[in-house]
Image (cartoon, rainbow, N blue to C red):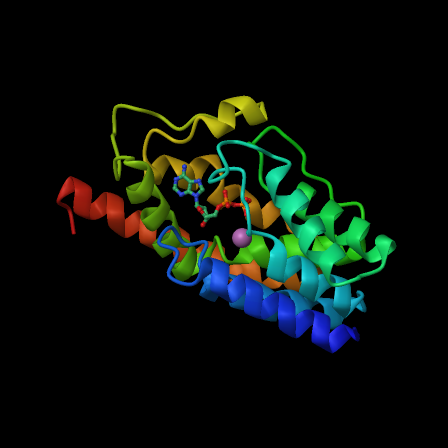
Length: 217
Ligand code: ADP
Ligand code: NI
């Protein structure tokens, strides 16, 4: 099967799996990450085939929805790509990217070994920032039953993945525990530029949120 057929079939399969998903990991998230990752890959001269496949498959079985199983995502991606006769090297590369993509807490480095991986990681992180990032955070928080905000509970700078996985006390805390930290963790020049603009949007949102909370605006 040629590369464009592999991409087409993978996109169809992921669209079937994730359409209508309600926590912000839906097919439209995948489409945005795919488009952004490919744009970054062009700027960085990364392998577009690997980048597109990893972007398409990165959330098919996220550990947060697979009973905490960290291997589920890479395992399902591998089984799918093997069924399409993708080369072993490309499968290892794509599955390595998927395994290493996630944020794991403020104090836990998440280093991507390859250029293609750094493009996909930036694109996925960009979709957690800005207006869409704000919308996704509250969608996810609602799904988890998290409070919007509790002024009595300060954010926690998690220093292990285990601690981070237990989640945030509130969705506003998630901004301080993850979202506002991402701009300094971007890998590529394009990623950094886009992240800076989206970071500003979140800062403005939080300023307005707290002013309304206090009744001063
Ligand atoms: P990653 O791509 O690093 O794995 P996630 O899948 O954890 O990111 O995050 C996907 C979306 O869900 C992001 O927009 C993120 O902000 C949101 N999210 C994850 N955990 C929480 C949380 N505890 N509260 C609110 N939003 C969250
Ligand atoms: Ni994602």
